[in-house]
Length: 227
Image 1 (spheres, rainbow, N blue to C red):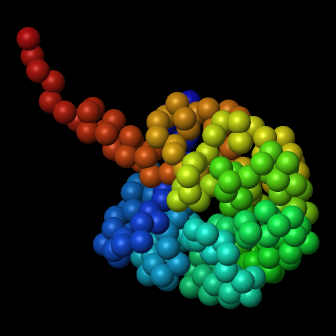
Image 2: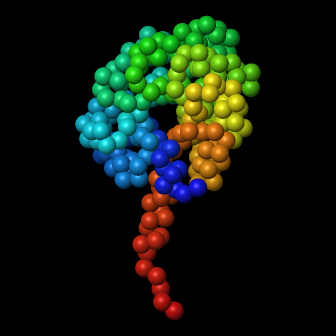
Image 3: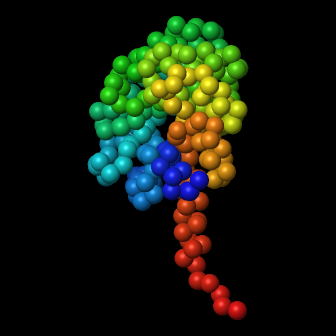
């Protein structure tokens, strides 16, 4: 698979807590240059990034991130504010306390609150696979599907583990056909990216693939020694 085709599936990501506006603009420049699916950035940078890129690049942001234990009302407000500021896509974190308490109706209400606040905006639901049992993952696939969300996402990248091949395959097998899968966290190589895509991931949350593309360009531009 060519790297340009992988890049089209990448949410080029910068969610570090101390990232600056200059770094966000640089991320946007890279996202536009390499034709990424979006840039995924903190909510406080959405308005500025949207002004900077206009319609040239999708802006994605995160809600209830990274822990997911805010109230549903707080998540819904945060999501509505992000959309008002120009977010094209929203990645929300589920309430894992509710999952572990098996309060499935509450889990669904939490997701639906954000879904209602983001109508017309693409919504990805982060379930943090590394903290879940297989049964919990499968139950969440059904809930995310029932809530009419566009994506289910493996990980925040801020917990004890990121995307795995097994999880991507499991999610793809159990969500509704119209629901897509996003793999995020720990995608470090082109082989990782190709494997996740082959297993059913439609999006990849990573900054590494753009860095690899830049490294390839630099290597191609380097002067060749004559012998």
